[in-house]
Length: 217
Image (cartoon, rainbow, N blue to C red; front, top):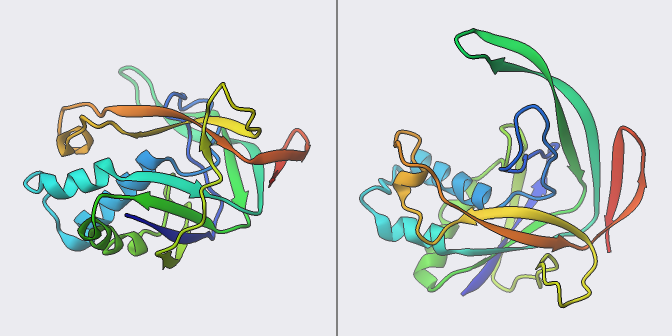
């Protein structure tokens, strides 16, 4: 079953690629499926008190949900250098400079979910509207509405045999073998990410040393 949620960005968005370092990181244009699912887990635990360790069926609904996007409007990337605290070996934290990108989105973000049953839809709708940020803390989004008839996704998977144009980025998602222990901060198990290349229908309008402006085609 397919449905979607509409969110309106209310602050600058930043989410660095999982392959990047803390010293230099470009931002993804959109919250990755991995980040969306982690935000959902956080709300389900904080608000619903769900013990996913003993409710693997509920965790599997989140893990196996397929997420796609419909985007609109303009994207403007602000390039900047910020101060961060970096830990040295056997030394206290030390102030250093890091490159960051912050994204301004002026259009609504539609997240399209594809799940197996109406019960899965009901479970996801119980907490999706409570999410108020994706990516870095402070990258706020305001929930607007649920749509039972979603828009057609205009962010597609990369395929070398097609001539789809746009901006390509690597996103990550929960791997099909992932368990709650892999994403539990109190567990010693490492997470398992599934990588995917997505093409966003964006064209570059103008740029300078401090910003790049894109528009949805």
